[in-house]
Amino acid sequence: MSFPEIVQVLDETQVVAVVTTRADGRPTATPIWSMVVDGVPYVRSVNGRDAWWYRHVRAGRPVAFALADGSIAERDRDAALGLPRESVATEYVPVDDEIQQRIDDELRRKYSYSPESVDAMLSEAARSCTLRVVAVD
Image (cartoon, rainbow, N blue to C red; front, side, top):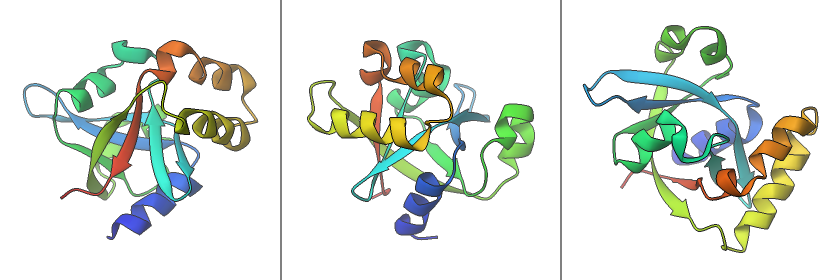
């Protein structure tokens, strides 16, 4: 799969499954939201730095996205691990980066069906945990 295909999945899928690695090496899947702005995908931790998937990513552990509807991870994390997936890298996006406002706007548009959840994703704690998804070198 090419990186543009990953971007398409992250853009068109409401809930994606991010697959990270625990300290003991076991993979785990977590359902999260993703936003694409000008062809660049982003993810944000609604639970801020307390989210274990976010801590795994920031610790430099491997990260991938399932290449299917990630909402399965909401019901069955193990089943989500059985989906095909593609490895990616991430880059931290500072809270004062000008792209943050455009990410906020995309959150409001893509997830307008859940305004309370969007509000949580617009919090300072969540904004400070924004990651750009990039191709693995």
